[in-house]
Image (cartoon, rainbow, N blue to C red; front, top):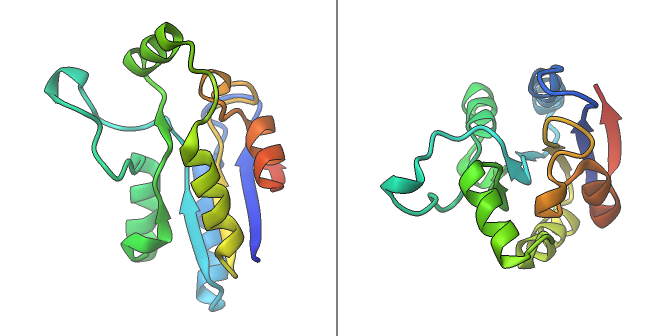
Length: 149
């Protein structure tokens, strides 16, 4: 069982992705096994009128960090949900406020990885509550250590 480090913040645009990039770059150069993901995608160019969400759902920030560090696709963890008006409306209409089955799969992936799993939280402590993926929910559910930026 490896270590899970959850990078979060009290407000959006505080430098979470930059911190992830710096940590991952240093540890990657030292030969550590690292994976990265954002359980709640907040940055994705998607139009609901153009069809369903892409699968796997890889946040644009995750893709950027992966490309910058030369990570293989299997080192990038897909997001469970996308933070958008369309998905929020759908979840509210269905009364679906938990993370769903995908969270159990994420927990299993994290627990089965021997290296470091870096996860970036949404924009603030509470962003993601509607999806069951707020920073406190992630930290508790994954038993992750947290760094606040």
